[in-house]
Image 1 (cartoon, rainbow, N blue to C red):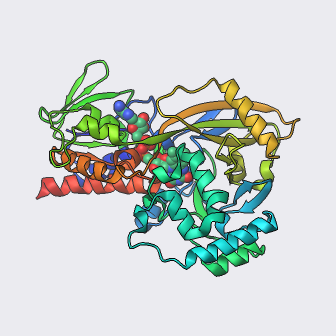
Image 2 (image 1 turned 60 degrees about the vertical axis):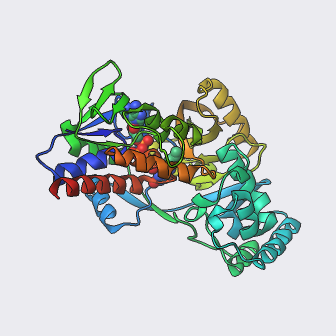
Image 3 (image 1 turned 120 degrees about the horizontal axis):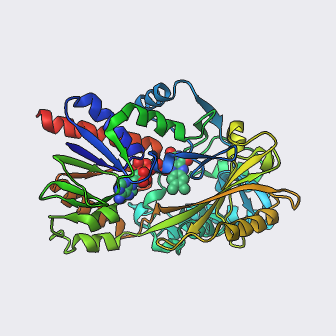
Length: 445
Ligand SMILES: Cc1cc2nc3c(=O)[nH]c(=O)nc-3n(C[C@H](O)[C@H](O)[C@H](O)COP(=O)(O)OP(=O)(O)OC[C@H]3O[C@@H](n4cnc5c(N)ncnc54)[C@H](O)[C@@H]3O)c2cc1C
């Protein structure tokens, strides 16, 4: 039996590919929730369809694109991104650094001069090792760093950006050249920058239709309501909450890496690093997110924006999405939906929905998104914990040591939280494919 721990996209994809590569070998996905899909599932409430914050598909790999199209049978549409930044009362196009027009002119002038000044000093050979705040100052200059990069990431990650390294930014943060920064400062458009200028999203049903279609293909190989509490690598068995024991010959885990490290039995710490598995788990940091999904009794909210980033510290949320502006079907006629994201300290409980709604409402009115007459007709709060892996200087050596240890014991740890990285839905599908291929190659060798 091959056990797959977690039924998000990575776990479901592993089971799907195993079914094709090793058809005679039994496999089982164990998912603790009553439904599969993990972060990429959707729920339907009072005529609204809510995802767990905006989940938009950025497909780069032709094989995954074909796979997703085949799974969802032509139900995906292509969407041109409409993303903005709300700062100092102005709405700027995304990305901030290439669209400064709209900010106070004296500030824009300082940002341009600082950008030019920063470009005079070359970056070190391994810029990803710089503290994030310093990286932002050296790449964009102090003005842009202080206007957006530093305050936004402080809000998102809940720590000083210099506690983090710049390792995660390489694909996520667009790097305009001087001409683009000058054009953007003068109000000339820099369209299509960054990793997500276009994305795919279902016309109906929310992002969850992808995981639902995959779960259908996985069929009986999926068991929901099965929470894994320990994995014994020596005895080769998994224990579920309630005491049931399941033997395995191979295991693929998509559980959060710190959780896995705390629950693996039968392997020692990593002598090279001088850390036990529990100590490795303790060295990994992350942030949680509160996802507050709102339904409002007014159509066409936020002038059609898909999402807006909020770097200013006075507003309590760091990003607000407008899902019904992406797919009209996500809200009933005459209504709009909003997805309000707040940083949250990991391991602390979700505050009552009423207090979150009150905070969100005050901030949304201050930002000119909600009007006092708007009625919130539906509110659903969820805690995403973990949500973002923190790339601090200990993260990469710890993850590498942990992976060597786990792989040596026959445990593959994949997916956003299994690999303990900053990744996305396409990567989760590819992780599953690659894990299945590696298991098949081992067995057929
Ligand atoms: C705020 C936010 C916004 C995002 N937006 C996007 C986006 O726009 N586009 C994009 O491509 N990606 C986005 N992502 C990333 C995307 O959600 C993930 O990359 C993807 O869903 C990860 O899939 P996964 O299977 O690796 O993990 P998960 O979806 O976390 O699946 C892991 C599964 O394991 C289960 N599990 C946990 N513990 C146990 C246990 N003890 N026993 C059994 N089961 C357990 C969980 O219930 C879950 O179903 C976003 C992520 C966040 C946090």
